[in-house]
Amino acid sequence: MTKNLKKMALSIIAIITITTVYAQKNEVGVTISGSPINTSISFNLLEKDTYYSVNQSYAFGLTYIRSITKLLDIETGVEYESFDASVHSVFDYYKRSRTSLLDIPVGVRLNLMKYFYVNGGLLFDLDISTDSPLHIQTGFGSMLGLGLKYDFSTGISLFLNPYVKFHSMLPYLIYKSGDQHILETALRLGITYHF
Image (cartoon, rainbow, N blue to C red; front, side, top):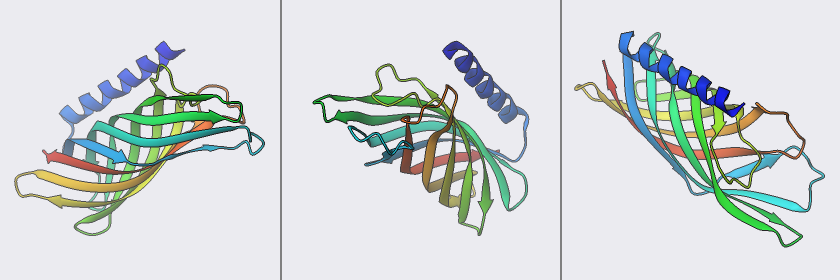
């Protein structure tokens, strides 16, 4: 089942790359993100003997923005994200490791004024962790953010984008009531080129 997910992710990346080459009014760029603290959410209120924590995170990725109108852009790309995660139990069990995700966001950017925007959309998360203490994060999530951007006359743009991502809201595998979902709050910095 994991091989099919990897094939799907590679297919989406190939489509994004081909679209980037042949489309107009495009921006492509690189991003880095980070956060000192995140959290995990469980919808099972009865699980009292185990505590999951998600702390520092970092991410880097490629972004593609397609202008639809002066006010509306479509935003997608691919990001690698890594979280410091641990599980604690009242039965003297402790495990700490990295949780790694490959994210494919698909969203919209609403340009409010010359320098500000709001963005949001869906995420496809692929959990590529080998030893994560959290439940598998593969599935669909959502994101919402605010942004500040500056366009230089050379075609280069810089942006700063604080955001919230809710990973694996709809898990790909069978959902269990005790599953943990990462709630990420971070700051993204990016540089893009218009062509």
